[in-house]
Amino acid sequence: MSKPRISIYLEVDTVAHGQTIKTAIQNQLVGKDIFETHSFDFGVGNLLNPSVIWGTAEFRFNNRVDRDSIRDWIKDQVQNHPQVKNWVTKAKITTHFCSHDNLEVQDCMTTEFVLELEK
Image (cartoon, rainbow, N blue to C red; front, side):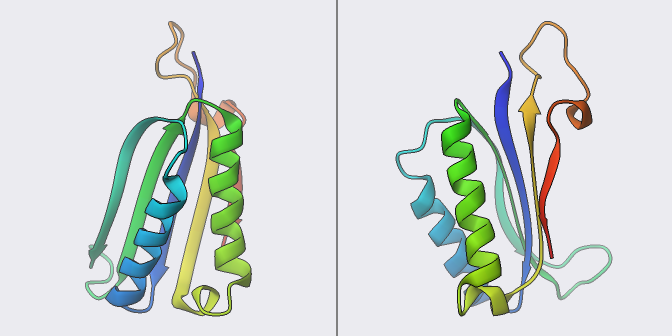
């Protein structure tokens, strides 16, 4: 059965702000019906930029309501929160219906794939 999925990628200005945002996301996930956590990572540096501070998360939920609640909350924080919108230097959120547990797996780009936010 297909599951609602969200993928989040953020770049922030400081490690402390990144940790604050990660903790806030963890708090928002409490009580949500999560089917599976694929990743919830935070780090410094990548191949292109050794000083970038990044966070990535990918969750599959058992229902759209919980996924959409997290999506809407993150979008609001990145776009409107007086501090967070300044801390986040880059953001990308995508959603789709993940069919990896179905007998016939479909390309994720064809299952209600939506780029929800790109900053």
